[in-house]
Length: 244
Image (tube, rainbow, N blue to C red; front, side):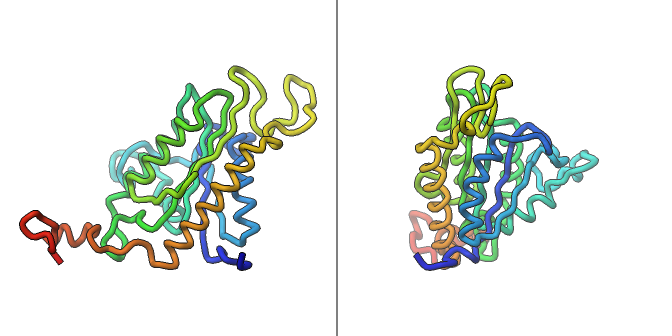
């Protein structure tokens, strides 16, 4: 493969752990596997731990305009908007994505009515994926909800756009743990999981391939999907199917 093939791409990793920094996040450890691959491919990467910021609840672009004293979301969104790829990371709690992940999706949804310079919804031409960790079943369930939400607001989802790791059902060591109940473990938990390593690698490269294809082709054609032209009255109809 051509060296530096992906060097003009930008990716942002948003970790939706419930733990504020500097507490160790097991989700962060697995996300870093994907990030390291991208770093080696000379992709520009940024990491955000959402819980470290004062992100208001709500579905408007700036919640200070809706009775909140502070909202860090507008500044965070600048990095997300600038990225070609968004990777959402979440732990599993009660079989579901974290409340922070749900907040992220709601705030992304708040921006989904904005449009790009072709009159399309803002996230058209951008690519999304997710990383899930936990000690119980739920990787596919969480990925299903996250990836559906991302595509609904305009992100493109490549094949096998999720990866994850779950331990045995019930209390136990989490991904990346080096000891459990005071005893040192032979290897960090999950690092030797071929299934997780393979899926994380495939997810990462599938995101890169699709993002590159879209970037090289200036995203999607706006033929038939322009919000601006729809609002201007240029609409398909049974009476006038060739509205252009």
